[in-house]
Image 1 (cartoon, helix red, strand yellow):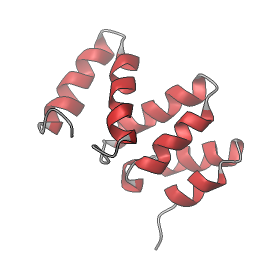
Image 2 (cartoon, helix red, strand yellow; image 1 turned 45 degrees about the horizontal axis):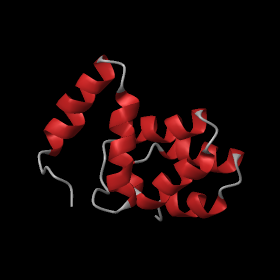
Image 3 (cartoon, helix red, strand yellow; image 1 turned 45 degrees about the vertical axis):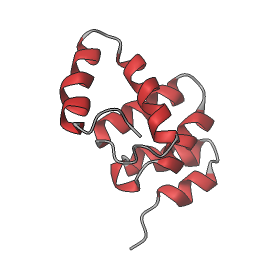
Image 4 (cartoon, one colour; image 1 turned 30 degrees about the horizontal axis):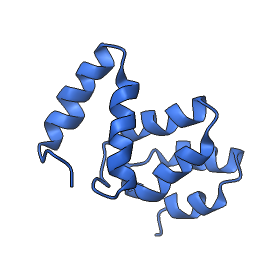
Length: 101
């Protein structure tokens, strides 16, 4: 389980401090461990976008796919997720990220 239940501090204040210092990558990598272990499944979309983009920019769409599998679909930028999945043929993640009407 995550060490803090103050998600507003975690996702607003703390993330902003890391981002302002130019080290948001460290925050995102640490956050990813909690997402993949299912300790945290709800993350603000703006932060999820950055995490997915981080892996895509580094040429690791498979790591972005893992995040998509483990995150609440409501927390995804659905256009970003669909484009990533279509571009890299990540059909399992595509079906996972697409909300059902």
